[in-house]
Amino acid sequence: MQNFDSEVSRLIAEHRGIGAMDALRLFLASETRSMLLDDDLKMWHFSPLAIYDMWENEQATGDPRNSLYLRGDEIA
Image (cartoon, rainbow, N blue to C red):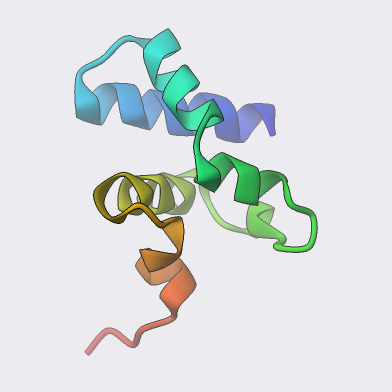
């Protein structure tokens, strides 16, 4: 999980213009991170960019499940 934590928090810091520690705290406290830790969900198969997208969706909508990666919508 350390790779996910560092990569996703780096993306958060870059896109939000905040410090690395603040970005890490935001990610560690998120539902997205809790879902990543759930072995039954097997979210470690996703890339850090996909996990970041889930986190962004959680911030925007309140639910990381609104991410295209989890909804499974077709792209036309």
